[in-house]
Length: 213
Image (cartoon, rainbow, N blue to C red; front, side, top):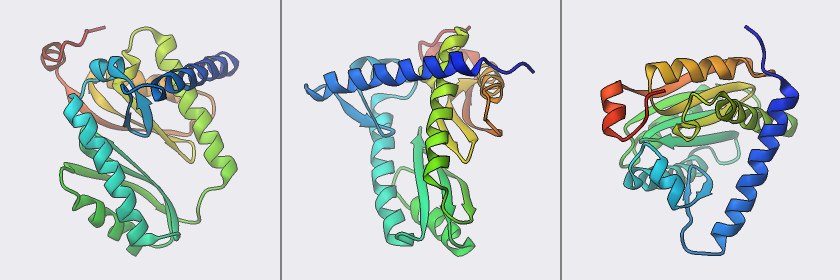
């Protein structure tokens, strides 16, 4: 499989990051911004997300409550990230022991509204600042590849990267899921792609007002 041009994707990723920075600055000056999945978004993004606005806010609340549970359960004994999409919770990062890994899954699973847990925590030392910075770049490059592809609704996907493994979340059709995974695997530096999707039929997507590419 041909790799995407890294320079082109890095340029697209930097442009996307700059656009988000400008948008967030504008949103923070008004009352239209909400925090969803760790980023400030406005009315337009809420309207095009395949989750309902209520579910988006519920995901935000789950993430905030999970952060408290993580702090209470393992404190500074690990590096843990939590991402909730459509009430499916993805745990990534590193913890000191298998006991911590299990305890975190149980603690987060008890949060009201959580539908399921995908526990991808690794029992190992915490990743370095350099590794986390590289993960941030890879996430931006994967997102840019979705935009560049033109045959995906890029904001239907949540992208999380941990130690060069890319996790893809979203409410998508099987075609969209396969296409997104293919594109992510083609980004230079990505070592593995894990699909964490809610799969929709074409009829279900049409009912949501989505478009079939």
